[in-house]
Amino acid sequence: MGGKIILNVAYNLAIFAFCMCAVWGFKNEQWLIAIGFALGIVVVIYFKMKLIKEVKQYVKTKKQ
Image (tube, rainbow, N blue to C red; front, top):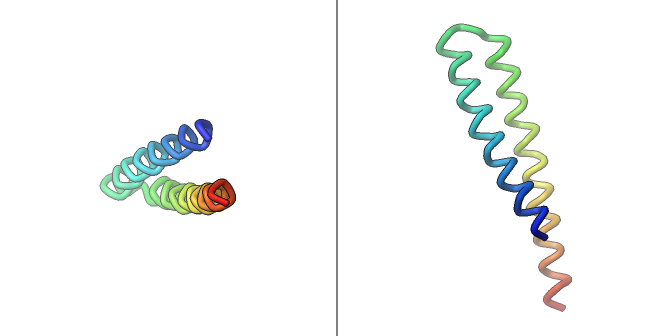
């Protein structure tokens, strides 16, 4: 379970860093970089949602 917490923190840091890079790309009109980081944000959010579902399932089975 500790590994999942660390993974969640890493996902949060990645989302933050990708957002900052995407904003930089938009401000400096580097459209390809901005779109690449925006797609990276979507992928990391997808993995984060999978992790949340996995943890919820783990908690449900642990209760029973």
